[in-house]
Image 1 (cartoon, chains in turn cyan, purple):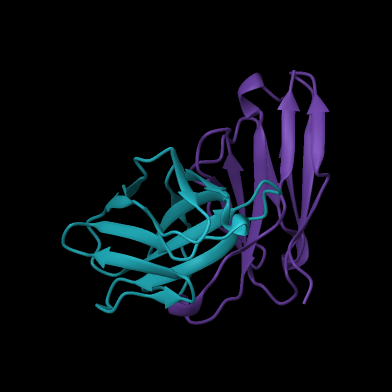
Image 2: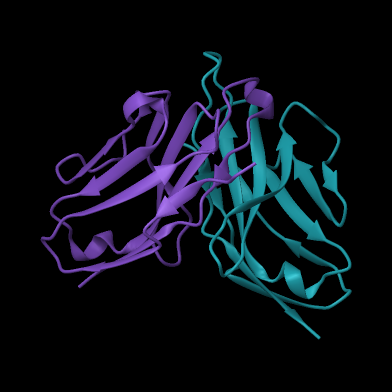
Length: 118
Length: 116
C-alpha cells in the first residue's frame, strides 16, 4: 500500500519570505503522480501543483515549485514571496497510474498547517 | 463553470441516527469520489464511482455506510446508524474521464458532520 508522510504539522513564514514544506512517500510503483493541495479554512480543497513521476523536470506554478527526488521518494513544496492568502493546510497527495484508463484515488498525507505572519 | 456542490454544509445528529449527504459534480465529470476527513488527518477515500458504477469501495464501512450514483450524475452518501467516530468532514470530488495523466480532481466545500 502507498503511504504519504508529512512530518511538519505546522510551519510559519513571514510575508514575502520563502518556505519549504516536506513530503515523503512510499510506493513500489514506477509511474505515478504527486500533488500538493491547499485547504483554506473554508475547506475547499484546491490543487496547487502536480508532478508526473516520469518527468525529471520539477514542476513550477508561479510562486510555487517542487523539488522532486524520485530515488529518495521525496516531494517538497517551495512557496516563494509568501502572501497572507497562502495561509492554509497543505496536503501532499499521491496517485498511482492505472493502465486501465480509469483514474485512481488520491492518497493524502496528514497535512502541514502554514501560518503567514506580517 | 459551476464547481462541485454539496449539501448540507453542516449536520449535527445523535449516535444511532441516520444521515444523508448529497453531491452534485461538475457537469460532464464521469468520475465521482467521496472522501472522509477526520480532524487532524488527510482525506481518505470511501468510494469512487465511474458513471454509475463503483470503481473502489474497499474502505467503505459497508455495515453502516452506503452510497449511490443513480443516472451517473449526482450522488448520495448515507450513514445508518451513525457512530461517534463518524464525526468528520465528508468531501465530494469529481474529475473528467480522459487522459489519466491530465486528470484533476475538483473538490466540493464538504459537509461537516458532528455525531453526539
